[in-house]
Length: 345
Image (cartoon, rainbow, N blue to C red; front, side, top):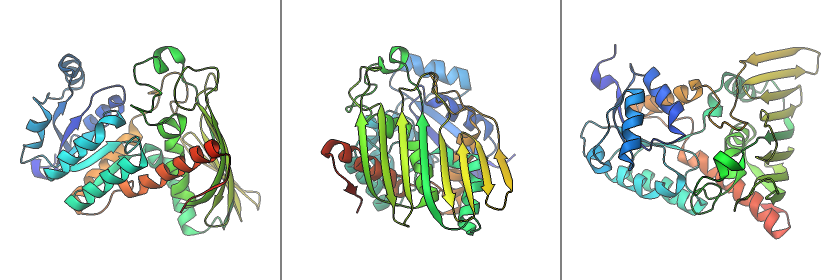
């Protein structure tokens, strides 16, 4: 058992639907992380959550931040509550790990990143798809160069979210709470993973729409073409209007092989005839239950953040890397709205 000061002392802010995999992950990391307390405005819901997972409720966010032994906060609130919470944590010298997206708009996301950088605190953003075994295996092969140059990319996120029980919840699918639709709320995980493997996108041409399957303010369908800075071309389709929902897939065509990530599995088809498979059978939350996936990926990302804080390095997924996907989302929406190709700076 690690000593108390070897463990990261963490406070959790927010205890809604997205908190379940984090709670399970934190309980699996008790030898590395101490959860000092959890805070949520709804005290009744907070008490239920803390009783279920064995955490102590915090009296207030102010009380949490005033704890001199607290190293960091894990923020799991909706995007519209983030900027003030991060600013107060940074002012108190607390590191921040936060659910995606960084905020509702890229401008607000940039302010959050700059606030943490000026305060000298670490900012990590939860993109757990990077921590799947298959994703990490492909990242290693891309970095080694053994697959050859990248030429073409195809990303598909054919998910489903029902109107009843999901979009009918107050604030869901609105700009005021979520900031965007399928791109910023669901497909952002796959877009971030893609960018971590491909490098930046140079320009996009896209169509975004809201289908008749949903009554919502934001988009539930996006299709588009992409030109990457490295010369590769690509296509994407992301939706929450594909009943009953399927696993997201990312295919990358290299000079020596094609690599396909489907959910938590990687298939490498080499031009010389070899076929390799890596990964595990798992759901990714593409259907009506958005929490239908294992917590292992969250566990590994939280562990990476704890190690980064303790060792003084940057985590795998940072506020800066998250801005790349925010800007890509902006470009896709702008391309559809303006009916033209949009370049990313």
